[in-house]
Image (cartoon, rainbow, N blue to C red; front, side, top):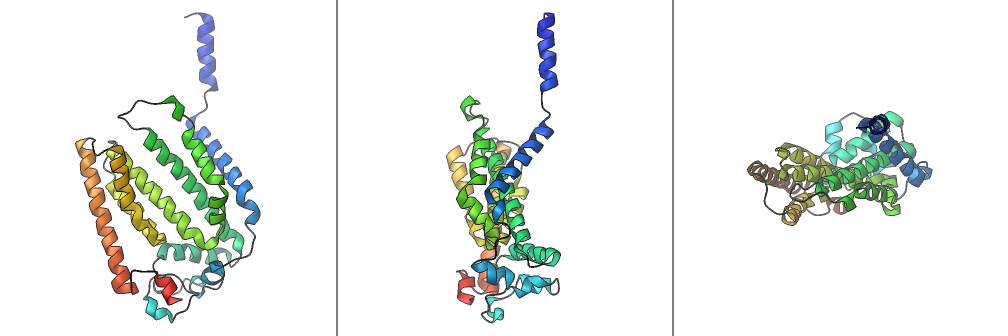
Length: 273
């Protein structure tokens, strides 16, 4: 190599940005974009269900009797709508943390929602990176930058930002975050990155704790397996079966609890209120 080539190589090495700094810059940029899109609504008053399920909710105002305030029979609520929804205990727990730490102001409830939305956008990006990194197909240059563009679109979409700004929609945002993490672990299992069925089961259980619509996750996992193909290493196949068995057990336990403990399988909150 000539001196000029050696100099150019050393210069390129000096200009290479460390991955940790690059990720930090991406995170700061994402937070700035999200604040520009939804920061002006942090101090808006509570609206719609926020007034009854957050501002007027007597269950989130104290740590006393916390287990009983999170999960109880719908019949025990005396048809009061200003109580926690017992089918969403993790959502109610997060509201309790907000209220007990910072009081009834609306800005910190929305700030937590926006932070969850930011984490969900990053989770969508990670999921797309996993999908595009399929080992059975060669790397395609036209996909470079697609995960970042998708995450930015998801992060700044008016519909998504509006949903995150609605305080009681925290159940939707947080559940979507857990579901995308579970799907990412499931797909990485089938790609041979190790048996991650425990992580999938944990994320799935947390998603159900935020909102019952997470019951659709097993069907999404089946769709991904059909779309990507049922093949893969022997260990990956075993990991996927463990994933499906664990999700089936969790789904059955959740539905059993709703029917025999909470009082039914349908929209219990609407019936109680």
